Image 1 (cartoon, rainbow, N blue to C red):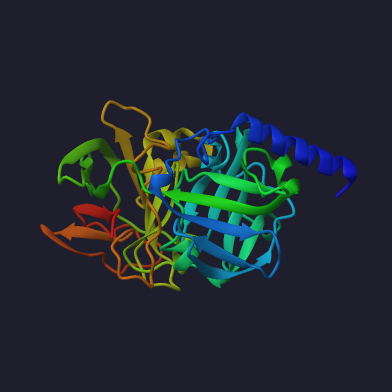
Image 2: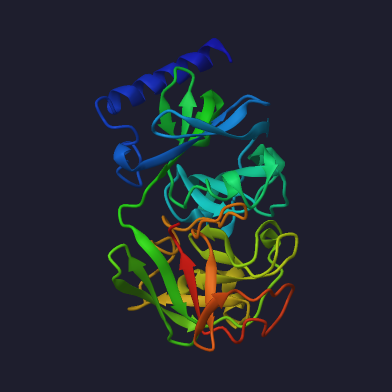
Length: 350
């Protein structure tokens, strides 16, 4: 780095330190008040090829997630359609085969970087815009330790100060990237959706009370060959972003699943065709309020299921003939593979 560049980096770091002196870690986040008491873990990615990516817990203990094999050389703009929701410096998509970071929104589109396992195929990212970590999808960093949508993202600059990653310019001064994962302010047990026109969608909180938040505009009856389901197991959340939740309906190494999307997201030109496709369940707010990017379904609570864990978080069951049971194993493109399902339940806790 040139002497001028180093001076600029130091000035930016000092400015951030002055502005947020005395503040709790993360109070500069535009998205949430980061309460240290709710911190579950931090994903730490040192910008050094072959260094270990770690999950660091509040007590200082750490767990290795695999070595970093490649560092992004650029960012992606425009990012995928729903990457435009938000303000920057956050996880904008969490999936079994990739996590996407929204750096900023420019000209109505998101600028992104991604965190992907070495063995993967991801349409919304590329190796030049990705942190590539030694591993496979569906577990670990892309399972149990997946960061929910909305998790704040920081770069650690050259004097060790974490700065909200809300500008691509900051990356040139970074020594590490950090994603902080917090326990939600409200504890929710699961989300349930009746798979019929005007069916109810609600969540159950930790006190056992149900809260309706949406209605079904169009139920789902079929399955599609969604690429990322190849890396996820049967009856597990595959991906979540502000405009979708994708569920795998087949075993790992097969393609099959369905998606749940908010009605307002189908207003985008490239998404309109989904209104007439049997592979999509469409939700709207009770009073037609916009659900895109809103908790609890499209932000904050969902994460991919972990195929190597016995926990329930990120798993999906269904109701057929009035009985709750495991998801049927359906792969490939079908129009009626899920036609018998009366309701879905998605678990948010272990």
